[in-house]
Every structure is written in C-alpha cells, then in structure tokens.
Image (cartoon, rainbow, N blue to C red; front, side, top):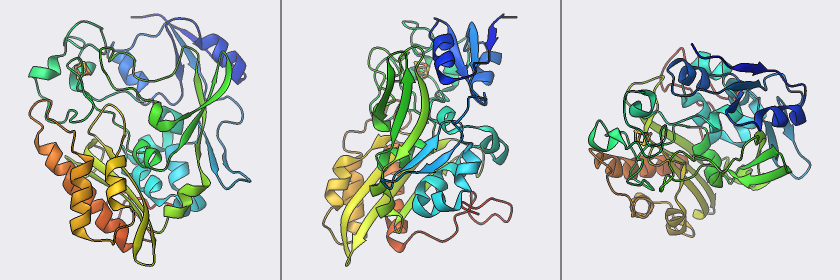
Length: 348
Ligand code: SF4
C-alpha cells in the first residue's frame, strides 16, 4: 500500500503550484496512469486532479482559421465533432482507431499525448528497464522485441510511442500550448516527445509543473482534408496498439501533388515525421511507383532493434498504401473498425 496526496485545484495556477513539487503527477481520466500505479510502475506522492479545471474542455474555431482543442476534450467527443472530422479527417480516423469505445469516451486529448510506452518490460517491475530505473539495463534488447522501434532508438531504450492520435497531428504541424511556472509557451507537437539517447527516462520536453492546456491545428492543415488517411496495422482488429501506422495527407491540384504531409506511428519513441518522403512527393504525379520511392526514403535510416526487421518493410508498405488511399479521396464516413456494423463513425 502506498500513500499519496490527492489535490483538486480550482484553476490552472493552483494546479501548476501543486504539481511543481517533486513526485507530483497530473491526473486526468487516468486511463494510463492508474494502471501504472496499480502495477507499481509509477509511484507519485501527489495526484493533482485536473479534470474539473474550467475552460479546458472546449473546441474553439479561432478567427485565424486554426482550431484550438482544450486538453480535457474527450477523444470520442473530438472524433464525433462533425466540423472537426470534416476538416481533419485523418486525425478523426486515428482517434477512432485507438483503444476501445469505452476508453475513448473517458480518455482526454492531453492525456493521449502523454501516455507512456507499452513496452511489456516497462510494465513488469521485475524486469530491468532504463526508463523506469535509469542505469538498470534494458531487458527488451534480448527479449520479446518484435514490436519495438526501428527508428531513433538507442542502446539504452528501444521502446515506441503508442499514440495513434499524435501521428496525423505531427504530420499536420500541430502545436501544444503549455502553462508552466514561467507562464505560457507553445511547442510544436513534433518536439514534445524526446528520443531516448542516454536518458530514456526523460520522455518529453515538459518541465516539473508544466500542464498542456490545449492543442492547436493551423488553418493550413484544412488544405489536406480532401486527400487524407490514417492506416493502422495491429495484431487484432480492435483494442490494440499499432504494430505500424501511417498518416498521409496530400494537397493535389490539377493532377499534381503540391504538398504532402506524412508521419509514421509504432516505429519510434515519438510520432515520426517523414520529411524526406514528403520532398520526394512534392511536385510529382500521383503514382504507386513514386509512393514506393517515398516510402523507401521515409525508412532510409531504419534499422532493426531486435526481431523486428519485418517492421521496416511493413512500414514502407503501409505508407505506400496510405498514400494510395489518400489519393483516391477521403471517404465521407470513416468507421472505427472497417466493415464492422458495430463500430462508430467519425463526425457522426
Ligand atoms: Fe525499458 Fe525502454 Fe528497455 Fe522497454 S525498451 S525495457 S521501456 S528501457
């Protein structure tokens, strides 16, 4: 039994003050944190419950054409917001492909971005894990590692980032708004998560007390709505994290790709933006040969971290597939589970 304080602040300033103490952790819906606490993986001395902070549960269309999503907006509410799903269909598709309907009803946008890796050795306190215990070693290196990283990993950690939602967001240049001890600042979402290097225990650019209050999608992101898809390969149809996923968003004019936005999930400790592949596509005519060339460019630096060489080939195929589907046009209705009469539909 481990004792911890429970604090329910009335506003953001109180929350930051309460969470700045060593050992404190923010609690939103707790869909990841409570599991970690029950397993003894995470042992915060204080939980700062932010679920009742005012003003963080709104979806706002700003005058500059951008969209501001409060950190406490629920994943399901965002996926089923019709205006959102029309403007950012790949993001809605990614949201619906994550977890289960029950979890999506509870989980928040901010919490989704900060969820921890699903590396099994991280969750098993009897295993050596540099992320949980710096300097302890990494049992995944010689263990069951077919789902681990193929890009950006280090000898210290080969874990992947589990979020689906974050993958198209990174492709579309989303920004996070952070309130902290030194006031408000903004950070490109692509810079929120860190690669492991020698310090896998440091997963994000956040400092003690920092609270993500909102996420913003720039107006330019709407320009990709007609040709945007998120494709996820998982080991079972539902309620599973990505083996590999890809977000592809194209701006096609008069038969030419003017601009491409691409990102991969399940391959690294952060959603992986594929800039080199985007450059291959810019100015080209949509064609599967070009898509394969772009996919090769996206994975050019990939290397297996264990029994996962297959993920490099798989990621290339999924990226080419996502590009092919995006070219055919964003469907009017995107179901959470393809072909299922029981799945929910984005924007519905
Ligand atoms: Fe821990 Fe990373 Fe190794 Fe998994 S891969 S056991 S999270 S150090």
